[in-house]
Length: 45
Image (tube, rainbow, N blue to C red; front, side):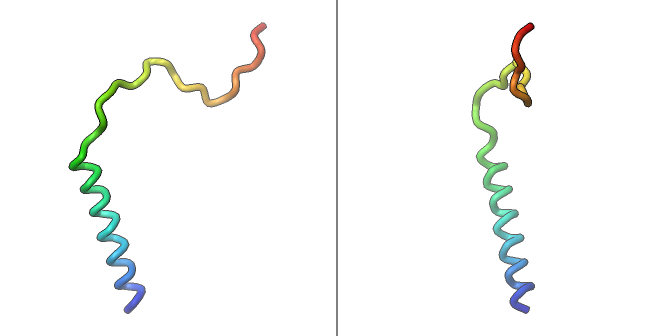
């Protein structure tokens, strides 16, 4: 029974967090048109 209660509390907290982030919305700004580098560039030839 304790595990069920803990799971219910955790689920309620997760849903509250999602609803809070949804209510606040995304911050203002723009994304960069430049692609992100996923690897370190090597030496130029």
